[in-house]
Amino acid sequence: MQRLGILLSGRGSNFMAIAEAIREGRLPGTEIAVVLSNLPDAAGLETARKLGLPAIAIPSAGRKRAEHDAEMIATLRAHRVDLVCLAGYMRIISPEFVRAFSNRILNIHPALLPAFPGLDAQAQALEFGAKVAGCTVHFVDEAVDHGAIILQRVVPVLDQDTAETLSARILDQEHIAYTEAIARVLSGQYSLVGRRYVRRGKE
Ligand code: GAR
Image (cartoon, rainbow, N blue to C red; front, side, top):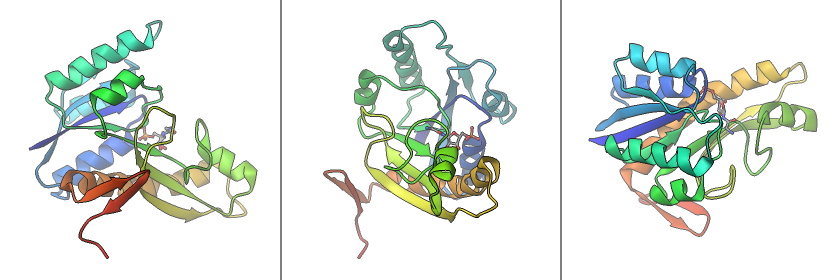
């Protein structure tokens, strides 16, 4: 079994999409080992508990990043996690955390990176006047929203869009993208060539 550790700070719809994919057999040989949040009242933690999954809050408020991350790393190791999935985890992780799970941490970002990194990516795209938007699943490196891109999915930006309608259109694609990216990474059928994620066995 390949064991996922999910990190979230909010409602957890990406987490739910991953859990649903596992339940439906779309990620064979994969299970969620633990769901962690830096915010004790994150709705995603409650959802995880309802699904019978280990769900643990490790509050970050008022704590040094290194100290908090050390506890996160220890908890992930205690649950024998193979792949860490940041799913709306709204906290920058330390270089020590990145090195502890080298090329074993994925993130999903609601923009076509390298455009619109950081917060409120969907509103940034709308205000900039972009005509396409989307989401990116990437490996996490020591810079924010920066590591090698595994896959992206694109949506149109419509004239009548608000940040909410655009976010909802992107979110639908996020739920497809994350499961697909996890399957690809867990298959091991890829190489990293510099920044480039290259699938093996594909023309
Ligand atoms: C998602 O849109 C995700 O892409 C975004 O937070 C949302 C979490 O939603 N992440 C970031 O902006 C990270 N920079 P969810 O809790 O329903 O999965």
